[in-house]
Image (tube, rainbow, N blue to C red; front, side, top):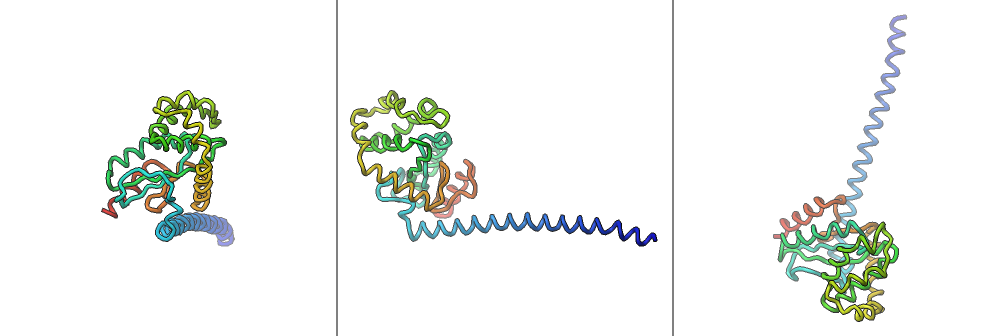
Length: 228
């Protein structure tokens, strides 16, 4: 009788062990599956960077940095995005820290409602050679014209003179149909690259392993070390 009682007590323990082992195996499976997926995505994007570079850099894309740079930082951003504003100083610092070795490529992903309006202003300012000045003014006053993710286009005009712009010329140039075509193409490329939020970065075709300032810094530095 005692032996039978002992056997009955052991059975639940065996079941618990089986459940525990199964749970651990499932966790390992999902972790490895996620890792393999990200690895495959990185390889796919690296292939695209070599074989289909135009997906990352179009002829019309605004760039900043040395033409001889071996490290390309492609940023998809939205002027109405608060996180894009927060990342702006970081990107500037990375470019300065690796001057001559990095090149920034600006791409648009105006996901916020109405934010393509501000992209058109930026592109019109580009024609006056005031792109970066205008972007900085936009970010400086973003909390006024894009408060709570609700862009209010009419509010931006009072701040634009601070960028040294011919504002009336901006009103005309921003309606250039070519600008609308470029925005449409950028959105198409963003979809191809599975860009779902902003900012989204690719460094020499490689996406961030996970989103974050340190991840961007480490990826840029690793590519600089690998290429120089």
